[in-house]
Amino acid sequence: MADEFARIARLKQRFESGARAGALVGIGDDAAVLATGAENLVLSVDTNQEGVHFERRFGPLSVLSARAFSAAISDLAAMGAAARCALTALTLPAQLSESDFDALVDGLARAAGEYSCPIVGGNLAAGPALSITTTVVGSVSGTGLSRAGARAGHRIYVTGALGSAALGLALLQRMAADRGPAFVARWLEPRARLAEGQQLLGIASAAIDVSDGALQDLEHLCRASGVGAEIDAAALPLAEGFVELARSIALDPLALALSGGEDYELLYTVPEHAPPGPGTCIGRVTPNPGRLVVLDPQQQPIAIATRGYRHFSG
Image (tube, rainbow, N blue to C red; front, side):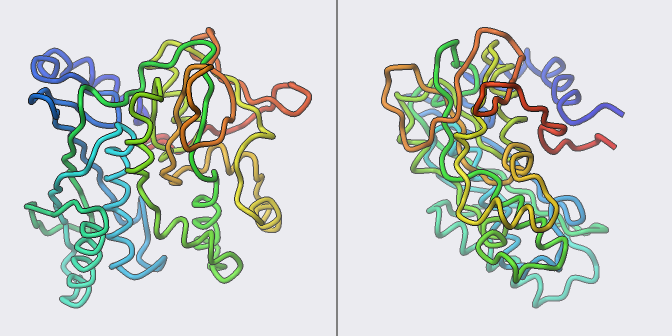
């Protein structure tokens, strides 16, 4: 079975000619950008499926639904867009109680308020498992940020710390949340970097949010820009206690930071002499298309077995 990104490539090939008729940015970026005047529309949709993206034992439905909303808003952040409104489509299993439904809606309403992004419509349907699909609408001047502007010599930055959410998820899966509540909170309650994305307008040459894993998302950016990248492992921003706690549950901290995903930080590139923006420099763009290398302090390559999460990969 073809994996997620091979299927996205097929969708892009099939739909691109029609989408390009009205889109400044189409399939293959974090969001589509439609020309509507001085402020263009930015559109994205994201699904959180029970049993794939979350399990109910991980937290209250009010927290899990707010988390799903943040994940969708993060795509707007990656484009440098301001949030305007959202639509939500809920697939509800028959055994979902009315109190569970109310909790689900309360979480969505809370998140919508926190991002000043009102929910203006959507859909309800019955199904075998809980699913939360969020369509977000934003606005930006011009095309905003995209994945396609990185050039050789540009520096690579990331906001916040990497790997914290993945470590939190690992603790939840091991029923050991009490060992690292701060990391569990990073998975349960991510914050989309809307303000940071807007700060990067006019500074960043390319950007993407870290959802599937920093290496894998950087690979998407490099492919769109026709470049390669070198990452300095020693420069990766890690939260206090991250390395020790990861090792205590037999996880490789470096692999977790680079391929864990769901941090919803912004990974972006900046021309060499431009302002750095709000992030930490972790590497540089190279002229070698598709070649991503992680270097140790002696500038020797480090093998990373997995670059990030892929749907349909078996």
